[in-house]
Image 1 (cartoon, rainbow, N blue to C red):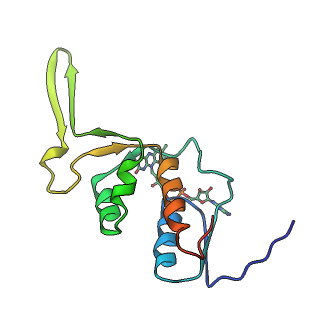
Image 2 (cartoon, helix red, strand yellow; image 1 turned 120 degrees about the vertical axis):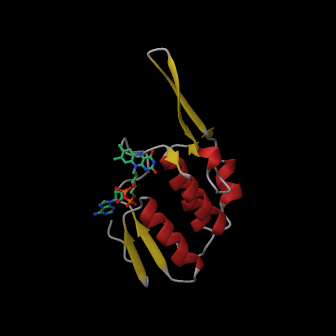
Length: 126
Ligand SMILES: Cc1cc2nc3c(=O)[nH]c(=O)nc-3n(C[C@H](O)[C@H](O)[C@H](O)COP(=O)(O)OP(=O)(O)OC[C@H]3O[C@@H](n4cnc5c(N)ncnc54)[C@H](O)[C@@H]3O)c2cc1C
């Protein structure tokens, strides 16, 4: 059934870019809607790593506490055994950031979280 809606801003695509933009506009008081062609975010191509810079942005937006309550695993050091030689590949603990690790979390959980916090602003919907 056809539905009509009048908004100031219409964002097409509910990936990370569209959802974060929708959140930012909604909380700035802009009448916004995010249109996503799928009924949910559960897509094979969606990744599962959230990087330190993304968590800093979540922190700046005041969303980090809720974000880190979502089920996730943290990776800080990466080592490998190559033909018997132990190789130290990465140590994110050396980064000068508040969140020196990669959070493993399905991207659809992250997107659902953005829907939840965005819905607290009266005019944003999926
Ligand atoms: C295999 C793979 C693994 C990845 N792994 C990671 C990872 O682990 N960590 C990480 O940070 N990044 C990862 N990425 C990159 C990350 O997924 C992308 O950078 C991110 O999804 C881009 O976000 P976006 O919002 O620009 O686009 P998209 O996520 O592609 O979102 C676009 C949205 O628009 C919707 N859409 C398209 N056309 C229409 C239409 N006409 N009407 C309505 N909706 C529409 C689509 O359904 C989609 O949901 C991975 C990418 C791939 C391909």
